Structure formats: structure tokens, C-alpha cells
Length: 71
Figure 1 (cartoon, one colour):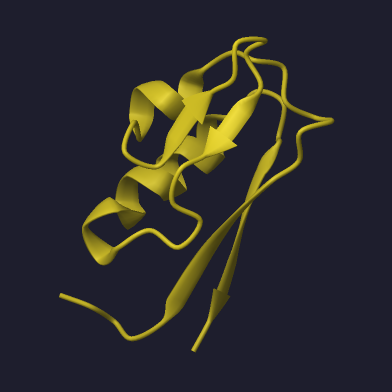
Figure 2 (cartoon, rainbow, N blue to C red):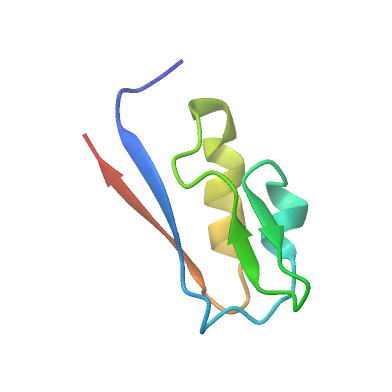
């Protein structure tokens, strides 16, 4: 079910510590470069990925991920 709101994932590469928690929680949305830094595969994830994305943001040990939500 699409809520109509737009969710955008924002990554701060300077804060990323390369732990990979985001990739384990939401592998369709996040990946890592060879040096371990986060890569956002889908900056505007679909509704079915949003719970995983919110969890990935919450468990990020470097606080390198944040969400922006708009109507």
C-alpha cells in the first residue's frame, strides 16, 4: 500500500564507519563500496522496502543515514 508520501534516503559518507548493518537489513536499498562505505542503491525506496530502510537507519552505528519525508 503506497501512502503517497515520498521517502528519500540520505547518506553521509564522512560518518560511515563501514559496519554494513544497513546492507544486512535492507540489501535492496544499500550496498558498500570496496572500502566499506555505504552506497545507496535506491534513494527513494518503494513502500515495501520502507520498514527495512527505517530499521537500517536506526541501527547504523555511525549515524551516517537519515531520512527525508515529504508529501
